[in-house]
Image (cartoon, one colour):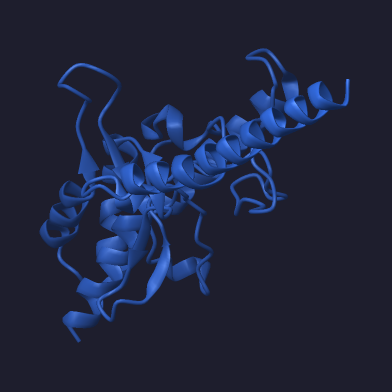
Length: 208
């Protein structure tokens, strides 16, 4: 009996040691190594964006609607609204993430959409009918950094006017921050607002 007990204990200890090495050492090292293969390292580290000085300024995967110091001279491109924000347009509450879970016929949702459309039309100086759908509806996460090319184009004139850049320069920056459909047919073209606002800021500073 005692001999069998020691034998089982020895087997159990060997299994514990082997699994500790495999799961606690080998597996994490393999996972870390794969995650840091060229092309994957950026995503593994959070897709951090740096400025011209090499300082981290955000993540290309997170979009937070910027708040201008002077609403009458707004130099930023804006993201989609967030369900977590106190104001109808934003900014998002970065401590939480998620959608509103409201249906298409919810009166509060429809009211918020109409308010957003009116406010954006006033901000951009256009007819409310020209405001694209993604400008007035929230994303599933509430922190989506991507907007449609149509929404980006709607904001070009204002950003150019406030920053002093030419319309052509701003449109070129929009094109550089744009991504097409995956494999040419999956999804929709998008513009990364986080990357775009950084590029606009750097172009404005370079022109001074």
